[in-house]
Image 1: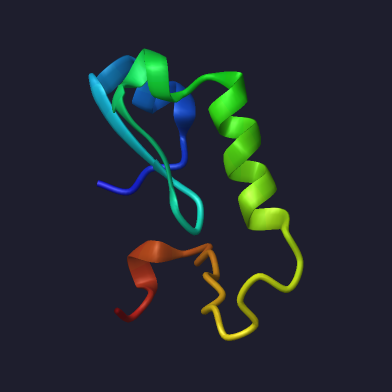
Image 2 (image 1 turned 30 degrees about the vertical axis):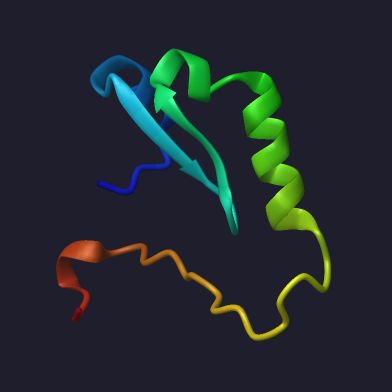
Length: 68
């Protein structure tokens, strides 16, 4: 599953893979979702000019009525 609700992940998933353009961390959730790893992930996605051809993800507000 791909999840962005970190509190939900912390409570429900014993293992976590943290990605942000590249692998940041993998393993026990409590070891992966540290402030240091989350900062590293944020820095990776906020670096300007990394990949100008990268696809932009858009959030759909109404997922139930959206076409796939």
